[in-house]
Length: 101
Image (cartoon, rainbow, N blue to C red):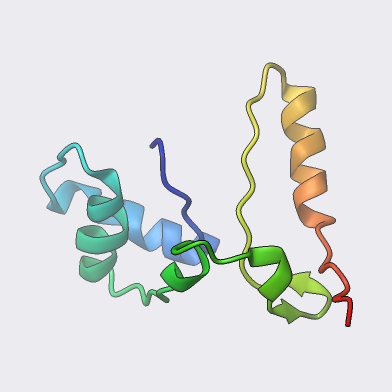
């Protein structure tokens, strides 16, 4: 997959992947995986598009849950397994930025 960000737990991914033989693939993987296959697998979805559209300042307006951002985007390009592991650890260390009054 390329381009989009996907969020899901292991159970949702497993359910979706179990149904891949029930849909004809096409060159719009976001529709295939988060639409068609998610519907077949009865995986619930949440629309967070408001956090990614229209000049929304995610850090200024972020919502936190237990000290971690509820919604975030994380992108890295990896040249080695070590870089991937470092980024994976950094992903789990993301904290909310304290808001200034």
